[in-house]
Image (tube, rainbow, N blue to C red; front, side, top):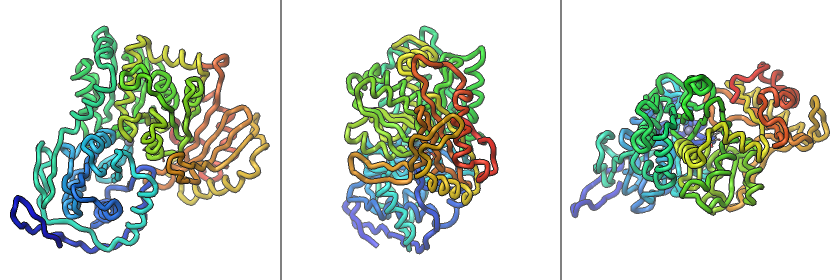
Length: 555
Ligand code: G6P
Ligand code: ZN
């Protein structure tokens, strides 16, 4: 119990101590704690995790906490509880998005802009939503980025010993009304989730150039997938940039994303893909995911892989006003193709290879070592926030196309004609039995020492290892971040188990092959990668371990 002074009077805000016991399996994965809604609905489940976060980060006097989510089912319930718990744990202020909404990049921006000590982002990203689907909680630190492993490790340790959580007796607040309210001794500000973010985008990019292109007939479709980016895209694309009404489709965030997977890939954004490959395609098609940090870019008749998008954006980023003359370096996750490395090499700047997960970019961005980062998992972003940012990537594409006055397809061809092309695909085997997937990876790792020199079809292994990363800034080491098999011709396959799934295991197989500018730069990806696909099957015994001869999803 604690006493506080409010408005000159002694007011007793009674802290309620609720006894609890640890739950197994509250380890934050690649991107926070992610489980089925039903799991989160158990008494004490979300509370245990949130209290563990607060116990580890220990809010200092005056500390502010940002809370926002992607609007999925269970969002409001957890937000109301988190507000009461924040009040009991000594936060002075909570900033929460109206309706409980904040896209992940917008939350990152709000944390930075208002000097908050951190934020709780409630999302399961691109996973489906609804009572039988997924929910998640992630803690971001004061730089606006996901908590590093040192912090998530402490949080996990805390969840294993937690005995009580703290709250206060208080009514739910009206999340839909902008303005300030008091909860216990804490101020809660409900803010417009879009305005700050839209203003930031306007500072970064040449909106005049884009507006000019739009008025000269440049067209687009943006599929918000009934997820969080709808209101952001409406404001930025239609209201501020002047794209025609109807440019943004599925623009209203729904608690179950309309029953779809809000994952902007060729499977779940098939309608957009079909449109872009057909006769009525606009100049560019784009989409974002559940919480707004991923992006999909498709030109008329031309899909751009996320790995290529990173390389193409990096090569052109200095066209955008906020990036002129200040591209210091590029970072990509290990399974992302090396297309960006070629750009870095040509520009004479460093390219960093990190483990999967945006959190690994945080130190590099904070230290000014890199300006742009990207991942094969449809994430691209820069030092403007500390999360990947779907709409940011779309706007950078628009800025570049508007200024260079070329199509997406022309830009891609020009890029490959200069740098060569990294043919790339990811094959996912979903909902594999967890034990079988673990055995596959174990056997693969056991073979690593003897793989070099072995032949698989026409490919000879030059090197094979389990990827380990030493952070160049804080020197922390992250081991076991995926198995790489490199072949003598420069192609490679990478094996990794997903860290974001909620059912069984997902095996990801990443395939890559480089073709120089003088080679076949406009061939079919599937055909170009046939030798690598066959080798991957043989090396890992995929069919033997998973019982599957083909992937569930190819992206
Ligand atoms: C989240 C993270 C990304 C990461 C991705 C990997 O989206 O924010 O940074 O690349 O997960 O997911 P996976 O399922 O492959 O672990
Ligand atoms: Zn996401």
